Image (cartoon, rainbow, N blue to C red; front, side):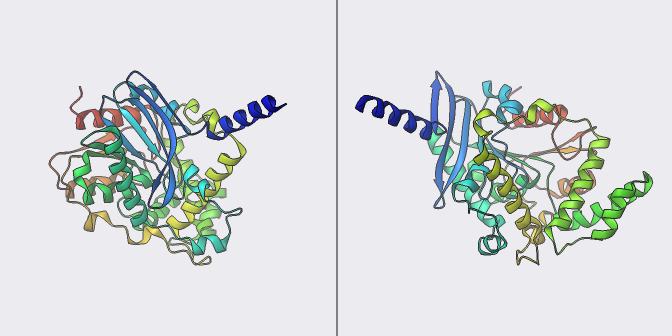
Length: 350
């Protein structure tokens, strides 16, 4: 009986620690674990060849973590790089580590999220990874929302990075949103989309007092971006089995809501918008590292015209704008190829 109890106890312990593991075969790393950053535990994954250059990925959303899909999307890169995916503060497993039983208005009001928090967290994650991997520099990659803290990190601590690659670069999100409303309204009128027209009329022009109204606009934008672009493979967005459970699924959903409300703001809930004070064309255009921007030509949410104007203003040791036809705000295979090409250029890989 004692042996049976001991075996059951050991099995339970194994199940409890299974998500926090380190595997190494030769030079190949495969780690998924929490690290303590700014007094909270934050989730990272580290995969790839430890002798190769390392990339720190800043996911979009905010709140849309890449870690559950990284193997599907980026697995092929592991032979040439170490890939570091991080669930940012307020997202995914990091959110779940200290999540309330219920995402309530009271919790949102009492726990604001700021760009400066994410930037400071990101800098400390980069410092940790450089020391852990024994490297001098990381390549910094930011997509969509992730491009906001990534720019802050690149400008404030260029000593940590050998280059910055931004995809669907955010420049001035509040102004973008106002322009997005005008553009999408014209498209809706042109296509006689009465359902979308009714929603746009009801929510009216940005900015919005309610995050729910902003979400309705984003949903229509995504609809029209899909119509004009080549989609990504469905297989990319299948959850890795270790993330596909009730707890992680709920934490991803709640973290996504928590982060989004903080990003667009909600005056009814007393939540200030993170996007309100962001204007990189005004104050974040001087870089001391190479800058590569990957931009979908059919992107409505962060339009190519805005990215081009920002790119023209950027001062950097080297810079390149990569325009991707038939690509919108999200990923597809052409976007992924453009990202890889830029990251290889940063690292001098042909």
